[in-house]
Length: 530
Ligand code: NAD
Image 1 (tube, rainbow, N blue to C red):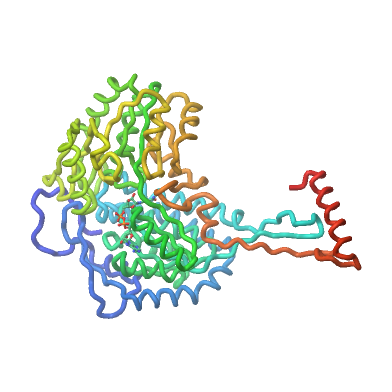
Image 2 (image 1 turned 90 degrees about the horizontal axis):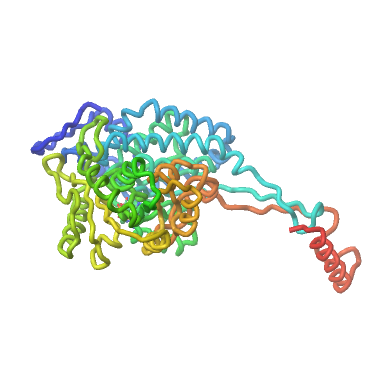
């Protein structure tokens, strides 16, 4: 990385790339492209400057990538688990060792603050450590009770799907490109990855680190192109489809996968609530709610756009929260110390401005923020707090995916639960209460894949031993936990019958065999066999 960015009021007019050309050149070697390929120029949302350009893949390149991984997959599947684990452990160390370079790339491509860029580095390390340590146990063949104890010996085993196609979005350009690939690889699959066109460098850097960690050539191929062409083609060739993005696109991806009868996991949009119960510890809840609403400028699938405040603490919470939001430090620099960075693109800014303007036009009150800050960066928008939001306003139910939160007053837990569930989405929720048992009771009634108690989102997200994902229109399938690796396998039931055949035999008539079997079934039930 050669450049340090500062907040620049005047955007540069020269299209000179600010990336180190040697770095770009090195990273582009991770891409499958053809000589003379058209090149895609990409900018940093931090300043609007040109970051550089990369060659685009063609449909033929996608086919070539698949041919390469299909050749490599049998040998990779046969690679001992301890060797695969060692690669992930080395990747863990490399991600932490090269964290500065990775954080630079995340910030440059996504515009987020440095501390939120570190979240992505930490996520890669945590997921790598988890699957390095647990995959062998999770994927070990497991003896199961056969239809007749002792006589029938059943083993459940896990066969790699083959090739996993991954399409990842721009909002977590490092972690969402890499952390699904890690369990897919540990399960013996090869991977074709299509990172978002807006943010390919983080993915390429992550792949470079995986190769430095020992991942053999040909096991993971990266192609680059638009979602509707190259992204769709990657998924169309895959034996398993792994998609992260919006719900409308997820529905299209699910239909295409269903048509081919291949499995898919879909991590989609959300409209997540934070509930502050009347016994919430406000000293923790105020900064917690700020992180919940404004991490990555609200461009985090599990961040919050609905703040449900118990009537009894409304008057104490709201002024403190609004004052804290107004005090947030906004900036786009490759250094720590900022609370909010930039939105990732002009279209994100357009959506945020449209949602806020619509709410204001219909009578909502802006308690904090409410305007773009081109003086800080071209797509920067202030952290914004709205009250008086009603169902006729777009931001009540649609995902804004920006730094905009609406406050709602609720009378009790039941009302908060009903509000949190009053959405087509079901991704994440956060509950703040001093009584954790109460928090768990509330959580049990909220239909979201994760619920954080006294935390915004990172506790459940970072607890990768347990699965996370969406209910309802927020997706299908889970990442993390055993489910997060088992999704990349086919379960196989291999059963051997010993000593006595299952079918009528030993000279028994069908009728006699039926009687013997009836007695045997009764005995097994009496013995408490499942
Ligand atoms: P999007 O659906 O428009 O795009 C997501 C990705 O899919 C992009 O890389 C895009 O190029 C690609 N794509 C588009 N059409 C495609 C097709 N037909 N086939 C294959 N790929 C295609 O979403 P977006 O607006 O870019 O991303 C933000 C959305 O992603 C938000 O809704 C957010 O909540 C969601 N998201 C969800 C999670 C999660 O884990 N649940 C994580 C991050 C983002």
